[in-house]
Image 1 (tube, rainbow, N blue to C red):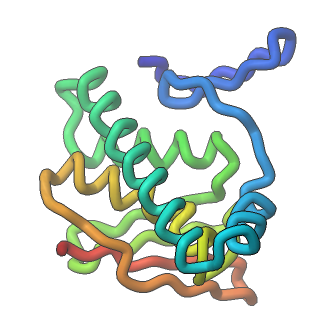
Image 2 (image 1 turned 90 degrees about the vertical axis):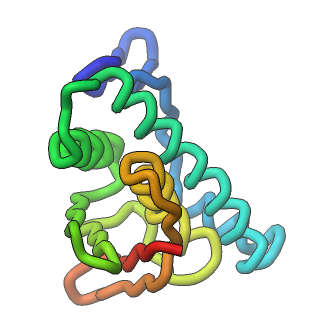
Image 3 (image 1 turned 60 degrees about the vertical axis):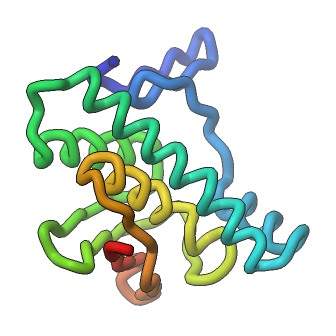
Length: 155
């Protein structure tokens, strides 16, 4: 697994955590999903996708860095999120619930697809790394500070 985010402008390729990615307007995607299927269904669809991707990314990272401890793995994942344009993420462990904060988030919303777009990925990551089931419990947006916050708790 590549340590670095690779952006080959000549080939038009972005790789993050060893996987190819495509830059998209995530806020527009979330808004469109909400309008197509309703906020509740969009939230479920986005949660299931992002939760699965988080688990896969964490498992792939752990396999590629078998000697790394939890802190090192989380630091790598936070860095990859920043490089992907999600925002600046802070993970607070070992709180229960676990606190996730994203400054300058690419998606701003507390309902529908936007609610789960950023945080369900972290729920999957934490489920894989800590070998416990987690859920998104609370999401809030602080407009003044442009900060999206979430509590992730054990099931």
